[in-house]
Length: 372
Image (cartoon, rainbow, N blue to C red; front, top):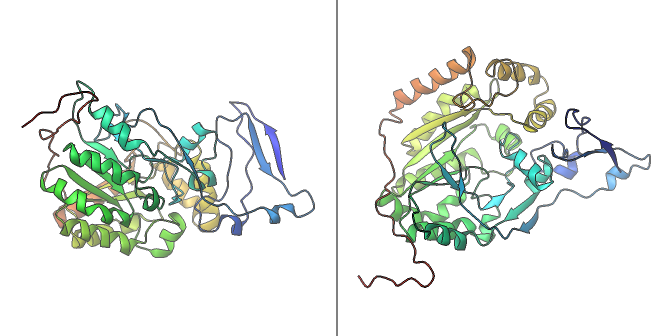
């Protein structure tokens, strides 16, 4: 049974006990705490009849959203894009560290197991995109896909929302940058390769670790590390510029792999690379600590101590310019190692921007098309 506990804005909710292992098999989060905006915290308690053992496993549930807008704008000074599209809410990959988890709280859902099992599809995304690109005065800049949740997560195989978006971007010759950890992006090489040939597309593949056991625990439903390297090669062979993101770098967990990941990525055909230090905003702090306690109990305290050393003694610091790379000696060391490895491998030597001058806005309803 679930007990309801009243909480206030300034009072943390009681710690949520871990969900029984078989109920969350193949999931990343250990618990399913309520979001930070909810007035009540639900805490699972056995009523004495062993009723918790009868609860069903977490299954992926799909809902549909009739979105009114599809392009999201931002003014963050430390990221390289000012607009993005997210075809889905939630992500079945289940990466425990995912910085997007707290967004599920805006839906009244949990950033824990709900985030990876209760997903939302935006079926009218391509239609909305065409309308927004056709608006008078639209100014072209690179459209980012995969900035919140992965546009190629497993449900994309069935719903093909990302592909429908790419169809619109290709037809209008609009530049696009994709971030994903999924091999499913290979399906759309037929769209991306011609776009890349015109300087309109690039793809970033996230590789967190080369250790299959660690990957399985951190990112339970994401493709394996070898599959991601295979994807880097397939994209590169098709002439699509590929960046590898070593992300997130987690102190005392995967930071020792930075050089190995970059070596393997270069060998697969990556042209550039980037990294992001582990970020733990809002509810992710608790979710990640719970994950450490279950999967790496002997190392949990050391990991969190190093994380705090990169965040001014706190578990997270959101200051622009520092939130992606951290601060302090340990963060500086990670940055220098990354730079030296990239220099040795010849990564990031070529700087290029996607073209904006080829854009052909779609016709607005009732607008006369050009004959030539």
